[in-house]
Image 1 (spheres, rainbow, N blue to C red):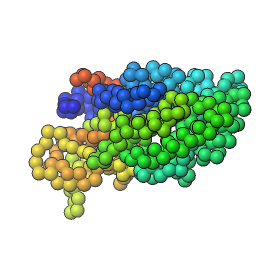
Image 2: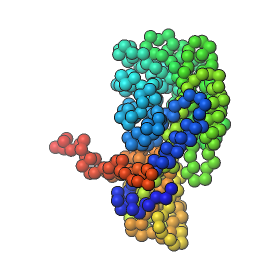
Image 3: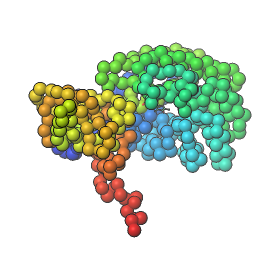
Image 4: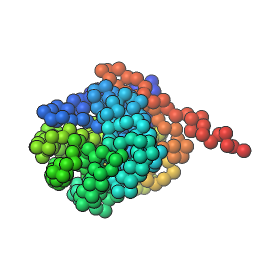
Length: 402
Ligand SMILES: *Cc1c(COP(=O)(O)O)cnc(C)c1O
């Protein structure tokens, strides 16, 4: 896709997030097609990019939502996601969150511990409701990804071990207020190999089979998210092979597949557009200082994640530079040793693959307003979040100033 970054910068200012909605729809269609032949719901993992218009764009295609807070559940509802396609996951849910989720009557509450199950049961009993639940199983598989985004090993805080899961299902089956209908795993993010997912899938399918044999009717088989994307030169999974593996492993189970991709749907739809403030050199290094920073796009600082960075409409001999923001932290960089032509004030740099865990992880650190977001669709652009002003940032504090 040919994006006119210069005119978008002129129209909306910088820094700016830009998302290609056609790309997002293509990813959704691709996954749907891959799973065809078996009942399935694509539950978009809202935390990857929680802009209401992004969720609504996916909801309009028929997507469900995977949410990790009641705030995300409410975003999904507000964006038009069918409530019977909403899952509430996450390791810690407050009673208030559980209450709201039960009142909203969403598809599933996904449990990650015995303690949580007891709280869901107690709240459901208070409300006189029956909670539809699934249990996140930790299959103890090394997903071969970055340790910060690996979730399926026993050292991780996520999910419960197989034996514990079995005990929980048996308890839930007996409870008046719990209805165990789903099983879930999610072993990590940015997965590029099929093998670990396939192993996990087999382990969890075996458990589902065991449960069915004791009359616990698992209807939803949730394979989590984690599909990797290309940031630089990674080899990623073939989506059709991924879906075929899942279809084959679950063939005799009579279940609806739930798949929860986040990054895969949006990462490469997104561009983070920033302006050069100035260049700075010392004996050793060249720095390009830009108006965007770690508070806008945290992944490089947090995970040492790589994002391709390119200069827009700029020629000249390239040399290595660190691309850094104005935030007062040495960890504030968007790229290290990036080959860039000589740059001047107001030149534009575009940071690629910024659609997932970009804006949604942004903050007001250093009292920097969160940036605007723009959607591109069929050649047209429209704003989907306005730039935060100073007034917006202080709104909840101002009245307490004495
Ligand atoms: C974060 C998360 C996802 C999405 O992960 P991606 O790597 O973005 O696909 C899916 N399911 C659960 C439970 C998650 O926590």
